[in-house]
Length: 404
Image (cartoon, rainbow, N blue to C red):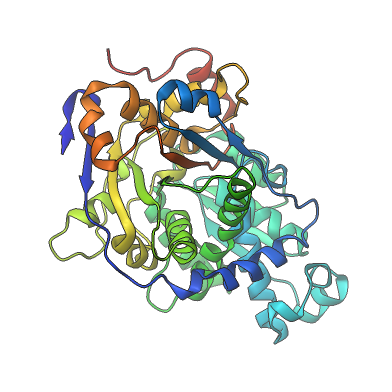
């Protein structure tokens, strides 16, 4: 259904009675979390409870998992890249990750035994920085390819971890293809968060790495005496969304939360996939322009789609002002609620909730989703202000305002 005034479209479906994916079981999540706990300066990121806002908006509780301070990198992506890199290193050593601690993988002996490796990826910013940090921690090199229009701050953040960066004149998906060709040409180890035929093991490891964030959030909600009834999760290639949905489907097999998947209008490949008659993953083309740079992906991760198609209740495609408004709301809390620095890709969930509870045009969707005073909403601020100039343009100066 379209809501034209807001350049907004949604598609509702009844989730299938599917078996939760075993790769995202609690046992798998425990193994991943044990690895992350060994990394330097690891600590769980905060779960911000916006209790006053929830009461004012009449939705019970709003919880925001805030990844703006993860390892000082301002984004969650390092959880996936670090776990994938460690798995690759263990494979080179002929060992299982459960048998090797992270400190030993970082040692000079391990680097000598494995030999020099160049890791490479294509990125809009956060994944590339996570990979560059991971390669640096484990004593190896990184080459990172970035699409046209990438913010200078994101380029410099990656270079700050010793990686070589090349900005292309291509969109994200074509940059992935370029990176893949360069990896094959130079014998580099590609660490990409999407898959293709014959390349599934590393993307799966990246997705599994994201379970640490979700597992932390559930533990923190449990300590607060709450459990999620609705989960808002954004999608680029879909790896984060699939990890969140796959893990929570395992934790709550009999009564999972309702999952709402959000994408930018110009890069809504999962929305297109949900509408396809064949039920197969569908890509979208064009320059994919959006302020939500981390979500500007036109081709879905096929492994992610296999999970999402069975469990998502609502697919949403929306314009940039939804994310911009979410940034302003999170940065300016009500009295007693914590403020949150949210980047463009991290704030779209809050922007959507604002529309659902405060705009009459969205009341039908709110009712269809069953959002009311007994609801407990969970969303993920996946990044901080990774583009400080644009952050100020939006939060300080009102960029991308809501329609009148």
